[in-house]
Length: 103
Image (cartoon, rainbow, N blue to C red; front, top):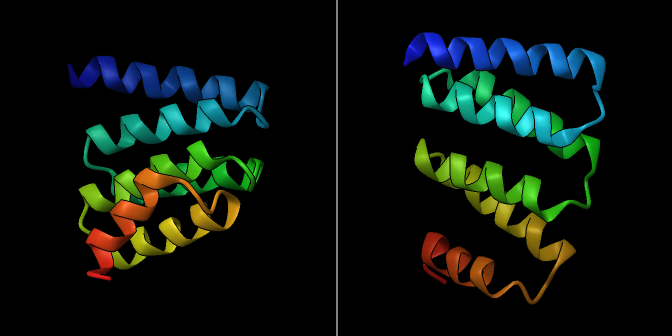
């Protein structure tokens, strides 16, 4: 399984090299790094996806759930706030922010 993940990471690396502006490739690579426990690499690629389009809520949501998974609650709250700036009525995120902050 690990070899398969390494191969998929390599494939996404090649795709990112050819098409660096396609944020979905960065997100998928980040998910693979997360699966293998390479959290710093995962965070790096989630952030790169956000930087490709700072108005894309889905990129923030992916990183938000990653932060929750690795128990980086302050960073998760920060992403909740960023999402709510883009979409103030995003009910799921409003509820999640309330749970994370206790407010």
